[in-house]
Length: 226
Ligand code: CA
Image 1 (tube, helix red, strand yellow):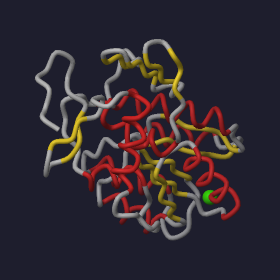
Image 2 (spheres, protein in one colour):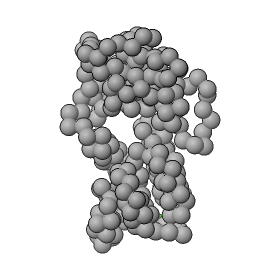
Image 3 (cartoon, helix red, strand yellow):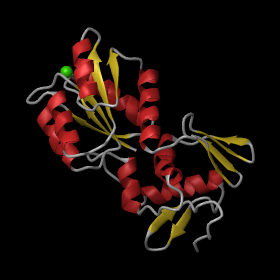
């Protein structure tokens, strides 16, 4: 999952970026409204965490432009405690939710998970596949009932695959979920994490579609040759 963080305060931004990355989200950080608007036109984000008071262009204007082109990317607005009017204006402009600064990191992450779940149309959060069970909310996985711990980066690769079983993701698409633009990507990074996931979740849990990418087959679906 890839998040665009829009925040002009260096201290808050640094803290948030660390917090989001530690939780397994590839996070890009823009510090002004104009750059945020440009970044959003690329259409690669799963969620936007949007400050309203920004240099060059305010957050509301960025949000209105996004919704104006019918882009439904979930937007979580971050506002100051006393700015009730801002929050209302944000929601009216098409934001999905808001958090009040200074926010509790755990609450922020929970709201992000809720929005991502909603946007994926997940009514039932638990994912079960053969002897593997994964709760995307808590990120707890188990195999035959025995708990398995996944790293943040393994989770970043796994999340899109379990969100859409049967859908083949290319290595490049999974790389996108892993890192932000600024970071170096080892050419075999996805293979390394898929290898780790297979060791933990079973050899055939994630299947390779040769020359195309990776897939978790739909339950009852025909297994793809690996
Ligand atoms: Ca600000």
